[in-house]
Image (cartoon, rainbow, N blue to C red; front, side, top):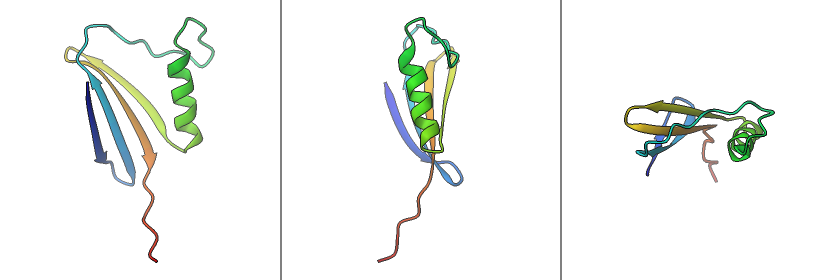
Amino acid sequence: MTLTLRDSGGAVAIDVADRGTATVVWPSADDATGRLGLVMARSLAASQRGRLMLSNDTSGTKFTLLVPAVEPSGS
């Protein structure tokens, strides 16, 4: 598993990549087939004005959490 933090133009992107061979299927909001964790993670991201995205390719699965960047307050 690889974790990467990066700037994404006004947002912070956190990528979690897994090189496993299993294919992850994105659940619908009302999915009741045991993938509740993904539904909850997507809901949590949305509650923070962010997004959770999923991509699969031959190198594995990658989740990306995008949340708005917050400028540090000047004291």
